[in-house]
Structure formats: C-alpha cells, structure tokens
Length: 163
Length: 184
Figure 1 (cartoon, rainbow over the protein chains, first blue to last red):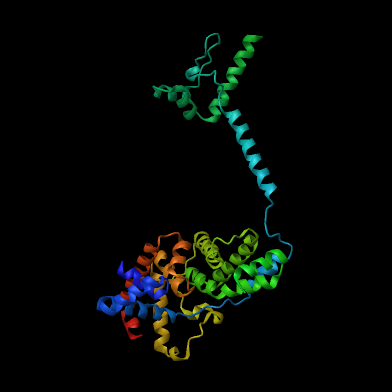
Figure 2: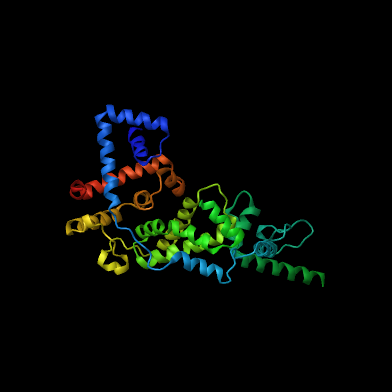
C-alpha cells in the first residue's frame, strides 16, 4: 500500500530498492508527495513533546537492590519442581477421595451379588434427568458432599451385613 | 560498546558499571514511554525501577534472538499494563503544573512562548484521548524512537496493523488539533 510504504520510507525502514521506488513515486506523484509532507509535518510536531527525566537514579537503584543479596534468579529450579510435584500429588489424592468407586451406579443400584444402597434424593432426581450415560451424568451432577455421604452409608451397610 | 558486550560483562564478570551503562542508555526513552502510558510521575518511576529490576534478574537467561531494547520495552510495557490494571489509576489529563517541578519539561528556547506551550499541552491532551493501541504506537515511535517493525514485534500486532493505527491516530489528532498542527 502506497501510504504504508511512504510511512516506512519516512521511518527509514525500507531496503534500498524499495526506497528508490518510493523516491521515484514521490517525484512523479503529487498525491504521494502530499502524503509524505503530511507525515513529516505530523511526526515533526510530535518531536516537540516534552521529554521526561526520572527524578531519581532508577538504574543505579535497581543495580544496588540486586547487589544487596537478592539472587538474580528469585526461585531456584528445584523449588519449582518440588511445588509442581506437590500439586500433582495433591490432585491425585483429591481425585481418589472424591471419585466414587467404579462398582457404584446411580440410584443406588449395584452389580449382581451386592446389596442395594438407597441413593440420596438429590442425586436420584438428578440422575433421573439423564437418559443416556448415567455414570458420567452422575459423576458430573452430584456434589462431593453427596458422594461422601453416599459412600459412608454404603460402607455402613456392608459392615452391618458382614457382622 | 555493544549491548551484548555489556550484558556479557555484567553476567559473566559481575561488573555493575556495565549494567549501569546498559540501563542508562535506555533510561530516558523508557521513562518517556512509560510516562505517556501511565500519566503519573510516581507510577512512571516505579515502573522504570521495576522494569530495570526484572531485566537485571532475567539477564542471565537472556538470549540474543531479540534486540535488548525491544526486550526491555516489552518488559516495561507489561509492567505498565499491570499497573494500569491493578491500580485502576489512569490519569488522562494532567496539566504540567500538577506534575511537580521535576517533571516540568525543558522546552526549547524557540518554543518557550506561551503559544507554543499551549500547543504542546493541547497535543499531550489529544494524545491522551486516543485509544490505547493507537496511543501506544504514537508514543513508541515518537518518544521511544522505535521503528515500526520493532513496534509490531513488541505489541504482537502485524506491521500493517501498526501502520494503520499510526495513520488513524494521525487522522484523529489532526481533527482534534488542526489549528495547532497547521501552525507548526
């Protein structure tokens, strides 16, 4: 685009060949020349903007802060690896605690040979809404607290029957 | 001495003078850029200092893929954007008398007249009214003296977009300041 090339020419960012092309265009095309003059005028006006100096020696202060004991790298690599490992471990434990056993089904139904455990009313209502994949729906819909309550009641029932 | 040599001397030999020379090369342009972004003297100096601190800490990991100046400005830009976001303080229109004596700009003798001063103030106010993306291009090109191609890399926008923003900003400033610019 002509305007962009003129802007880059003004900025001194064109290679030699393209610069020559733009110079020819500026000589031959009055519209391009007017555009160039306008660009020059605009950026010259911005040159008049005030220059701001920092009131304190920021470079020196930053260097002094670094030099007074603060390490260049704030956290060593091993600490990052340790944190990452701890997060993964915690996530795994949480998943194990909160995810129901594969033997469980919604609505308190169990596999053959096991006693049925009554499901909580909330989870029952939620699971009734799903017509297809009940397992995933149940997993998604029930809260962690419901699952824990459900597991606890199942555990109590199994213990009572074994006694 | 090249930037890369100074970086090497600081990182390998721990020469503080080398780091000082390196930072002081860009201190003024970075201050001007951050000043226009933040429009607040204290925020501006804090941002410069934080940027330098981050740069010094990251220098050992710095690689020569990009130019140091561009890298420095990218860190400064992120710092300014964070400050704007967190402090929710964008002073759009400070008058020079509110900036304290330290930020009163040394005007050139020829422009010391009242008319010239008013013109420059009007220009600053108009720039502050521009959308952030357009303002940034104008500031980086005029105050920080970065080429458009580097601005494109710094802001992550294509070169054509950067040039279009510069053009739009020019049109808007022209309409806002036609008398002042035409008098120039």
